[in-house]
Length: 138
Figure 1 (cartoon, rainbow, N blue to C red):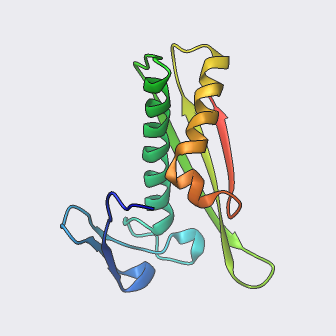
Figure 2: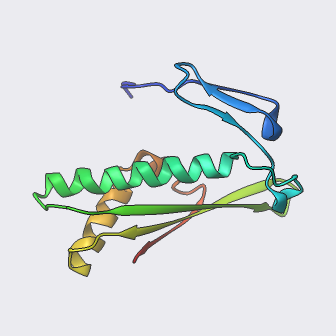
Figure 3: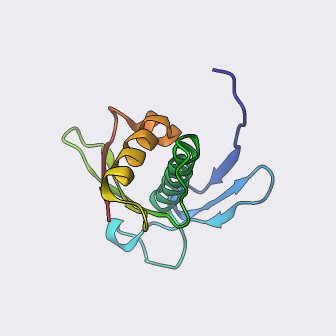
């Protein structure tokens, strides 16, 4: 693979710390969610960051395959949901769900774009076979 871009971020303090990108564009306080035993203070967490990244990347992949097919998308959105839970061996696993909205497109065209986007999206390619990902057209 020829790398086109490399993102760099450093986390300190784990899930109760901070994460900062090398260019300073990302600088977030992290907190363990109440559901995982945290205080519930208003701060982000790795699952939210993953959900934001995957949904943004997948929405862009839809636009990419639509442009290649000469299909005009005037409006679209992807909502990502990332869950975390325990596995049988005492570790943890993630699950992901993407809810895609493509108003103005017929259902068959939208489903075709979603399927092609799932083939080209780097997050989909990275998680394939490793993570349960559900994709729903709204």
